[in-house]
Amino acid sequence: MEITIPFIVINLALVFYSIGVWAERIQGRLKPWHLAFFCLGLICDTWGTGMMFEMAGGMTFDIHGITGLLAIVLMLVHTVWAAFALLKKDENVLTNFHKFSVVVWFIWLVPYFSPMILGGMA
Image (cartoon, rainbow, N blue to C red; front, side, top):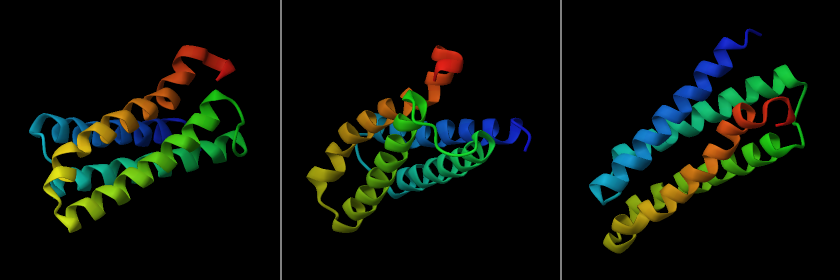
């Protein structure tokens, strides 16, 4: 598999997830279209990670691999929780959800940037 495709897909995950998280933060209230971007980010991250697993011969138990798995699990929890929050329509949850979103986004950045920072040690 060519390295370009997983690179593009992972970068799309960054774009989609960042749009959802920061638009929600700026607007101050979780909206359905934010959830759509969380979903797109999660799909692209999972897809890109799957392609990278294939290239690496499976999961790597290093900083990148462990934080990457943690990030996907947190993104999944975040996305599911956002869906429930929107269905429940609790205004307090909808206006404070961004606090969790930003934390998950920052955690997601660790596996995104670790190969660039640590190189072959990631």
